Image (cartoon, rainbow, N blue to C red; front, side, top):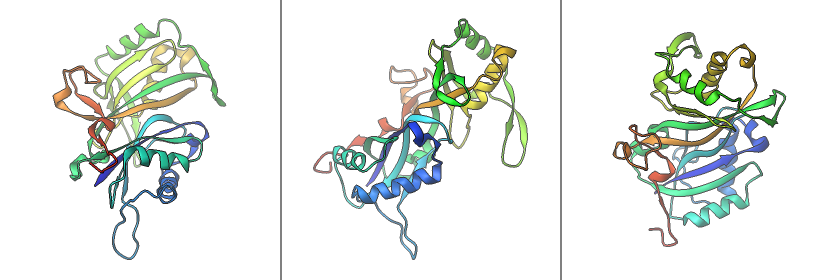
Length: 254
């Protein structure tokens, strides 16, 4: 049986890198007595894979990783046992069963992510949040109405010009934050920092160096059957949360 775990990360734990988060959950699995499966061979390790890990400094309400179980455990029981042994800053939100086929793994199906970007009073602290300037709702629409949005995208080996407009599914400015719905995954992956930096340049010189804090709301997979229904998070694209693709495990394991 395979299970998908959704968790949120906040507070000082946002400064913990991905490898440390992975080690953290390995210890949580043992302490919470979750019946997780191990690989074979001389150096067995827990079968665990994360879907689009966060960068350091980013908080989130929706992060995911998949595990294999040696025996069923009720979703409610698993969530409670894990949260009882967790440190402040990471909470398990849900625990659901997912199909066993490899094509359904979170690493494979992730296609988009939703973010909120808040403006900060100072780059030295994430506590002071500034109100979004008046007129930014229209400015965001103008930003997306451009024929193309060319940025310099850096990779490990080089940098190149890329049109990021097709990878921005939605963008909206509210009184509190700038909401972004961006392509995320192995095929196309657009970081919110890159979009926000380009938008601040578009907004004018006075905003160009404004500090901001990124918060990820959730991670999504494509589901074409939901493209034009009320369940679609972006109309015409068909995106559903990774959590919604699983089902709760009941006390009897079914």
